[in-house]
Amino acid sequence: MTLRDRQEALVAALVAGGPLPDGFSPEPVQATAAALAQKRSGEVAKAWPALAAALGPDFPSLFTAWAVGRAPAGSAADGWAFARSLGADLPERAAGELAAAEVRFVLGPAGVRRRSGPALRRVPGGVVLQIFGRIVRLGR
Amino acid sequence: MTGSAALPGPAAVPGRAGGAGAGLGLRGVGIGWRPEISGFVESLPELGFCEVIAESLPLSGPLPASLAALRERGIPVIPHGVRLSLGSADPVEPARVTRFAAAARITGAPVVSEHIAFVRAGGIEAGHLLPVPRTREALDALAANIARTQAELPVPLALEPIATLFDWPEDELTEADFLTELLHRTGALLLLDLANVYANARNRGTSPMDLLDRLPLDRVAYVHVAGGSEHGGRYHDTHTDPVPAEVLDLVTALCERASPGIMLERDGHYPPAAELAAELSAIATAAGRAA
Image (cartoon, rainbow over all chains, first blue to last red; front, side):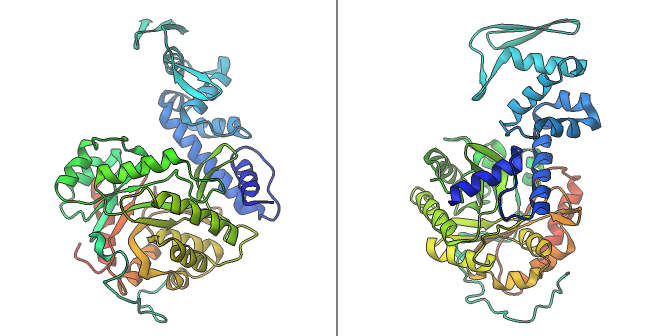
């Protein structure tokens, strides 16, 4: 195995749910994986403050459980995909944050990119509108 | 496990005050500049120097106003890269090197620094610094990436050995021998992180003072100090906790032999200004300098 293969296998094991590569001690690698997951969750909480606040003390464990086996895509994209995965369980307080992201940006396979045209999203009790880059919230 | 401040053994570092980093102008006590504590950093009357995350700087300037104010006061600002991935088997990405060199130019830095680590592989970002195996193959990959980087840099490069919770099964060299050989091959300077020395030695069950003694201290450009905490029997170099006394003991031991600039790295859970100022004073005191 080359250095490249070994590095790929190790990163996959640490952040993307891959198997432990041959020869490594499991405990310290698992401790590292846990530390990386915690750091990732902290960065997502910073990028998605309303989502993290709405889920409160449950946020780190809920996010980390979702993130197992999913390679990091950056905190903006990770938080977005996690918020969507909550579906009807997405707290009302976090819905506006997700809608504001959805009207400004597009979440694609290559990450987050800016929308070229206007967009509209429903949120509980109203809508969020983006036009010419400005965000307007209508309703309560 | 704690070290005593009085250090016996192979003490004298060749060229005490005239080590490799002596001409860089990095003196006294510094701190890692972060946007969250920029006001605090600016308010420090005795600030020796500071560091800024290289990837956070704009490509062509201007510098954030707070950093520009520090530069006007003549305080060195050192770009510290975290995402070059010099330890990857793959060649370092040219755009990242260009950006790193630009950071050196817009800060007017006397030196720039990066880690002996890799942060991505196979298209997956690890999100943190990972150790390379201490093998000949990894030395070759690192030396090649460092040479590619140095070719574009206007100033010297200092390399920082990282904290790690695990080692690779294929390790052929000790941490000290690997580092000495890498610096010899590349001509790079050493960014010595005493918290990493402490963390690695402690987690391997060895003596931090012994590890410090074996490192190429004559290559030191400047020094990092940071806090950490223990979870599950392991010491984590968190940068979000107070600096432990054992790390300050390493500061004292080092400063008995050399007088490099020393800086605190803090990356979150920022304490009140008075507490952060007290940490800087403790570092100055440990170094035998007026607080």
